[in-house]
Image (cartoon, rainbow, N blue to C red; front, side, top):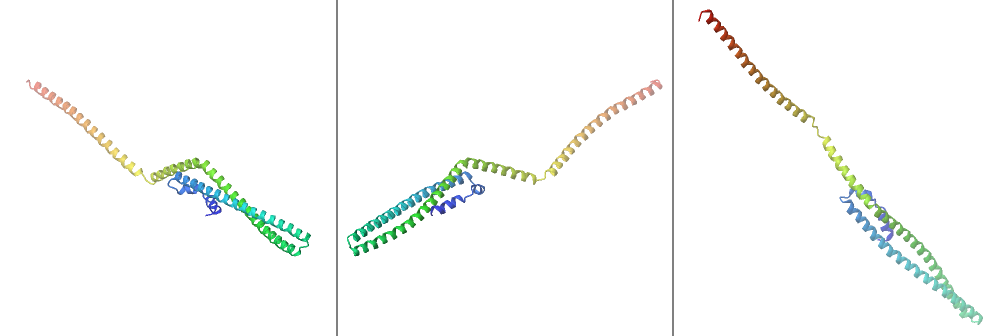
Length: 219
């Protein structure tokens, strides 16, 4: 994969989206950074290779120009010596080298533009990598906070979906029944005591009447 494709792939990566779908956001972020580091190393290697090729084209261009100049001087020398055949041959060769120089110049211009584009892409990737490094801890913190909020929201949703009012009403009813039984027992106990005291009162009255009768009859 070339640096352009690799750079495009990395720069299209949406880290926040990855965090939303990652089971381990920190591990995912580390993987993203590792991928970026690999892309940067590959990009640096390819940029260096393209710069080397640019220098080779420049060297070929310089050689072609030098040869064209040399054969031009030879043509002048041949003309000065009235050696027209040699002059013609020298001019042919000068023309060939000049044509080569034109071709090399076009190649050099295209190669230079390609190298500049590669350098620009590499700088953009390095900038993206530095941003990811700076924001790594912040993104991890955001992810953990979002996970905690999600857990709370889930628990709240479960609680809100359950109606405890009927259970509470049932419990309240049972408590009221227990209270009523206790009150009834107290009331029964109180009534029994009252009856005992009343009986004692009735017995005294009977004894008094019996004493009165005995007194009346002289006994």
